[in-house]
Image (tube, rainbow, N blue to C red; front, side, top):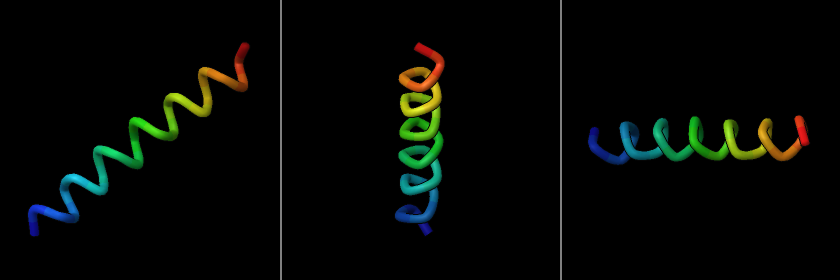
Length: 24
C-alpha cells in the first residue's frame, strides 16, 4: 500500500502546483 500513499502525495502536489499556476 505504499504506492497508494505516494500517489496521493503526488496528486496533492500536482493539484497545488496547477492551482498556483491558475491563480497566477
